[in-house]
Length: 193
Image 1: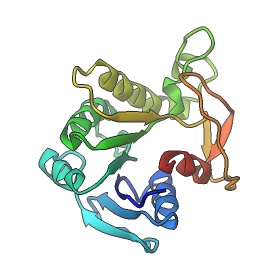
Image 2: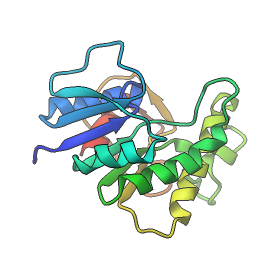
Image 3: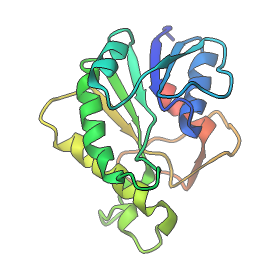
Image 4: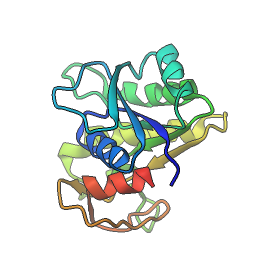
């Protein structure tokens, strides 16, 4: 494929780091954007740049020099911070990116069961994941409700996203889960594809 310059916000998290690694391995130029310098080395072909997803001018500046932007950040897990701030932050982030394509690393909670119920609203949904899943689903709803036809994709993984092995494959679907689990490595393949 074509070599692209890709910015990854949240590129030091588990999903973000897997995406950075996959993109760099394929020869793309990757810019890891975060508020704090990474504590681990970045793969060859990746560079770090200071930036904040909540600063529209900085986001716009970073996006203008790239072909794609990955939003691999989620709701704040800092005690006392409001996970509900994620939805408006995501909406403002996508708007600040402008015409550049945005791939949002989503969660499975917004996926639907066969009867149209969100997974996060089902009785078997894990309590530990509830808070982040509700905030993520609100972020998706905020993007769907936005009037501007921004160029964004919300990529939800299978309900179980884990450190499992890289198989090199994945299955795509629409709004319902197409599998029970996927590794971070295989999810990263789907994002970079």
